[in-house]
Length: 361
Image (tube, rainbow, N blue to C red; front, side):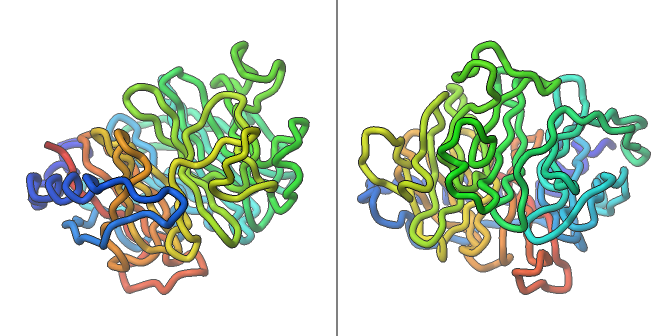
């Protein structure tokens, strides 16, 4: 039995219909005022354990159904077996794990090459690795650095990687504490970047010769595409509003001039905003027309219908602590990554964990 089938076996314990009904019914609320914090009352949905005992996990990527997990502080890349045990695939060398820095986002390209975003001595970098072996025996090859020298800091460190439906690699770079860099097109800080799998500038990027895809960001933490190709991004605010944005090539999202909905023509407003105390939206996944957003401080999973992204519902509120990532598994299930061992949470005996919620039809 391969990993894909093993995970499906775990998930069969969850009730498929009731879970989907809870999520979709809760999402179908009347659109509230977008200037106010969004969300209905929290609902509980079944979650099944996939793995436990992880150390500050940050990202999950799937290699032909085999889950690969990054640990921020240890710089380890782990594979998760059918029975929930983990083994070390490799350690990313030269990682400076301080504060929000360390080994962060993972992504796989069409050739099954692994990309990792990590913090080094000279800034954040994106490196590519060949993987050898099969499930239970995967090994990490030597790194090829495709982009380095990105702004880094112990806060606002960005770190999400994702391949878009266009085959291009997208990377989120925080402002690294330099607020003004987000409005400076000569800096890669406070941006969403778009590049080829080799780190080159695509010919159709909005600014000639530049990796910058969108700017005016403080600290984007989640990326997900709807079925029609619309790109959504979650972003940490400062003291007033966290944001869910629809990303358009070349657009300016306002930081640090504005935070949240400002109704100024020169900036793109978020489609939804939340108080940071209730949110800190991190990783995000799209499953069957719904965006699922993992929240750290808010300790909640939000479900946002793509058909009306001004609305949302809350699930798993406070049940598993801080939630770092939401990931669409190959079988259509939703995986949630907790983050209680990162120095800001209150870890339980099994933390950190990966949990699965089946939202399939």
